[in-house]
Image (cartoon, rainbow, N blue to C red; front, side):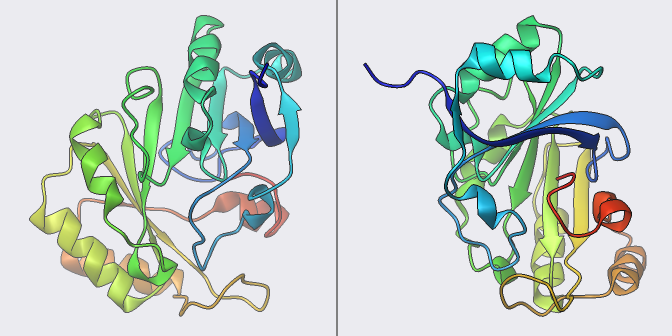
Length: 224
């Protein structure tokens, strides 16, 4: 008989560092495994390893945290077969569920039960493959689309999608990748002020965001 749970990299309680829920207490369930290798990935430790956990075990683990907000992240959470079952169980227990996904895997089984944060990969990621497009028609107005901006070319590419296509979500997020001496991979990196000024100059209908957890706790595993 095969294992009927999930491979979990970590579970923790922290402040949401991104999205329209930024600053709110969240339970983070980081699942192991990803089929992409983005140059600026800050959670490569979740590619492998982790702990096998049944869904009931996961529910017991999160019960002490006094918040009803849960984020499933990774890695790529939709790679695991039992993720939709976990979402259903969380919802039945009264949790509000968000899922951060790269969009290369169909969201159809979870989109009606969770708030989707679709992280569209920009050219600097090295993983800009266009697979997200099949998921765009499935998104709800209450979902969110995220672009991680690491260069001028990333910004120009993301701007063209925002201005030339009809995106179904009310929230579109632009997040800068800030180059530091400890940054993973090789990518240009940008200054937050530059990105903010570009958004204002072009009058884009997007939300500028910083990963606030990294300003609070540093560039470690805290937050998402």
